[in-house]
Length: 384
Image: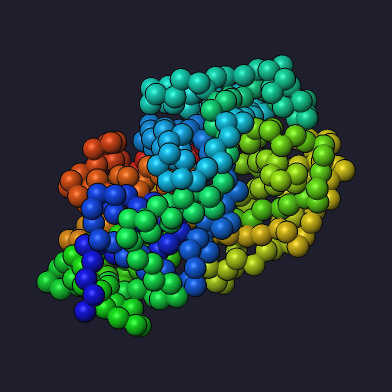
């Protein structure tokens, strides 16, 4: 029977980061992935946004740790992660929304984000001239937020992990083997790997993986869609990610096309459905064309539009650390749309918990799995 110091379930960007960081600490690590290759779930569907503008200190600190690691990423892995500090611009259209943004800035500055600032409509016009200002009250802008290349971050961690001897097994469903209340291995349809340490990095499927081990975690998939225009020159590639607090509509330019996003509910009988629902397009286009008049000339390239899955937790924060009631199972689940941007930090933190018994780079107590049963959830905002 093959053995490993650790088995990671899931070869998306978080699983790859975890595997690399475990191997860097000397653990013989195997990654088991249900898909035929790496990054074929949520990672492949990510739009590449990166921000530190959150409403809780723990999320801000996760972003700051990830940003530091992105700045050192090429030296560490040999791959350029594509980090470009084009900024994130949050726009308020009412006094209540503006107060929400001001409160968030206070949190962000307490957590160490110094670059964020409140901006007035005139400053918004300078930062993003295409935004229609007739209803705009103000906003916030952080110039060190911006964009990354998710598949390059994935590639960097995969290549660095392989150099450290990590083995990747694809096309294999993994089930935890539990003996006497602790992890004893991982079973696939091909083999059983003996190990005392399993990391659940299964993305939207994390709840299923945990349940098979007898652990309940409140993580479920939610479909999110991206509308993609035909090549469009009306907005610059370097424009900031622009988010309207009112309803979460946001947009960016990538590779000469505009990506339009709006977090509307998309009911389906299959919670893992990633079929693109064209009925959503009317709502997103109305929002786009009334807020940026130049987009009246943009046309949607339906063949390039896509849908993917967020792995949601009840408070929209990742569940991180030892699984309650099962020794040897570690959780890094429920990032709620922030998985790629936080992957560098999450991999490091998981490796610290596994090898040191606790995270040393960051206080992760607000992210513990038991917070839901304890009624100690993180305050969350549907936009921030």
